[in-house]
Image (cartoon, rainbow, N blue to C red):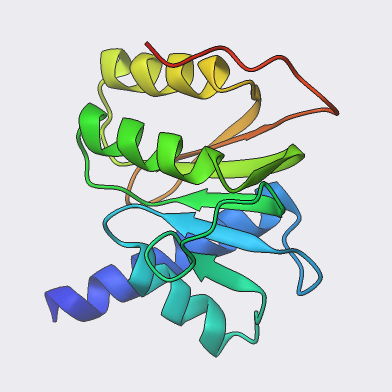
Length: 147
């Protein structure tokens, strides 16, 4: 029963991420984080075919236009997933990050990391699991080195 509840909540997260990033079948998409395979399978069932996870697509060529981050609820896990996914993302990419914590300090850490990677925050939408934050890069951006 708990598993079924999580799947329906993940579906809501997927809907939110699709809406915020404008994801379509035309976009090459990279998924990173601890729940990346669950989100990958959900999107494949919905007909998305140009999606990959950082575990299944090992060559970071900066050719993906959308990144979806679904990591464990710790700053270190989200930080690692963002860093890992950013190697795959083009200079004009959009990302959506699931933040399960309701702590403002935690959200600010994630926001700083997203901005440090050269993204501009565009929106944040609350859902059952937490907050989905969306951001994008516009053209070529000087990327700051992660500390």
